[in-house]
Amino acid sequence: MSRTRSHEIFQRALELMPGGVNSPARAFGGVGGEPLVFERGEGAYLYDVDGNRYIDYIGSWGPMILGHGNEKVRAAIHAAVDQGTSFGAPTERENQLAELIIDIVPSVEKVRLVNSGTEATMSAIRVARGFTGRNKIIKFAGNYHGHVDSLLVAAGSAAATLGVPNSPGVTPGTTADTIVLPYNDVAALTETFAKYGDELACVIFEPIVGNMGTVIPKPEFLQAMRDLCTQHGAVMLMDEVMTGFRVALGGAQQLFGVTPDLTTMGKIVGGGLPIAAYGGRADIMNHVLPAGKVFQAGTLSGNPLATAAGIATLSILKETNPYPRLEQLGERLMTGLAKAAADAGVPYSVARVGSMATLFFGAGPVVDWDTAAQSDTKRYADFFWGLIDRGVYFPCSQFEALFISVTHTDDDIDATIAAAQEALSA
Ligand code: PLP
Image 1: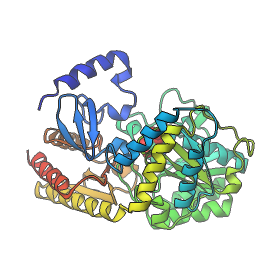
Image 2: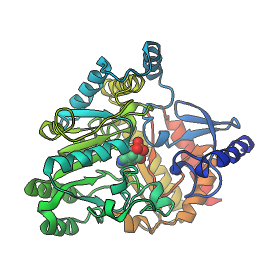
Image 3: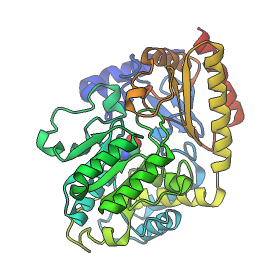
Image 4: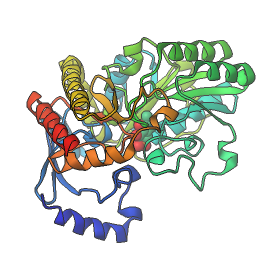
């Protein structure tokens, strides 16, 4: 399998962009070697610039739940392009996307559209602070909420993969009000509320973590968080940028029956175009300017192309209910990978919710950052390259979830399992 063209393009990229990329998660820092350069995606497949085909389990890190190039989404974008790409003024499509979100996610009574998950979490934290008049926030080690300064503490995703969970350039002052706790630790949460309860603006969390690999919350952890936030008047801020419209149409909150006060959404909500959202209780959201006084704005927010893609994507998900099928595919894949690891005598643990999952190399079970960090990242790197050589594109870090799309077939899954068997026994 030649990767000559990828190599040439990436060498040039290194001269042009820091590390040759526009987002560090793409740089293969967790597995070594050079990233592949892609030319096109079609359904479940990606094609690199050397003409190699890969079964794609990244889906652009989550958005492409319908696979690449869904016909209806493409048609919606094409139609929108012809009407104009940005007006900086209200459009009816913003209403349509907002209505869809509010209809699908019952805890969201009002919503604001932004351009990235980072903007969504940054803005939601600001509103939580403006609403409560409090400063302190709780986040969990290994959870990633975008590159918001105050949240770049013990962060997951590329920050964890590349060893900069606390980034230079983020001042101690910016993070002074951020309290970091271990995920799934009810006692730590309870103690912190006992100590700082009346100073806490919010708790921000991934309801299923994807950014230290997939980590599933204990039901008592989510319940304790809900109860403590209510008792102490803190905002429960569920970051569903990854899980929203992924683990169920209504996200993790629907799956687990937990109602947050604010929710952030991204990825799938834009169907592969740059759009994200935050929303929740109307009494909180009414604090956002110009209804209230908490400032938040954006030149391209509610962009016509992005809303068109988002409306098409959410409408398809609502109409077709692909979640039972995604569950089947996820089950088939992870059962097969677990068997491949067991047959190869490799210690492993599997975490999966529907179509998002991780095969951890190591004893497991993984419940928080400390247990995730014990994974055998060297073995993951070998596994990753073994899969690449066999035409399968997995996350380029042990600490990232894989995603399956509705366009993956049983044959794709079986081919992936066969590739994994070979890679693990090589
Ligand atoms: N929140 C979560 C849970 C995420 O997974 C991510 C990105 O991976 C973000 C926020 C940030 O989103 P974006 O990359 O669109 O800024």
